[in-house]
Length: 151
Image (cartoon, rainbow, N blue to C red; front, side, top):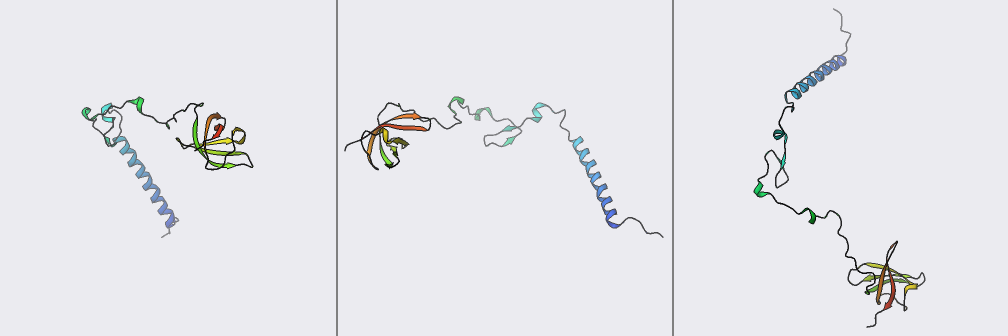
């Protein structure tokens, strides 16, 4: 009796290959049987219920809520524009007299506004209450005509 030329691993690989082919044929038959072609639009529709879950039944029209699409904002709300000429008040939070600039915290909006020493009407130091007007620059708002408020 002659021995087989195939080793155990070759036989094992051949069985595995045939098993994969059989699985592939079975999956193909299953897909063919469960084909969704020929279904009506109503059978293919999916609906969302009030909790956000998918269902096959449409929502009860009495539970439907209509929203005003104009009132929905998707972006960050715009800041209220204050007139540029209006006199504002604030407190000097930082001032570097060597470099000649500082920052003012606005009393109402708590916005931090830059100012330069050339825009000062009188000398200021940190924690001084000041009045000023705001102008827009390419880097942001800049305080102009900065003057001390006397208590």
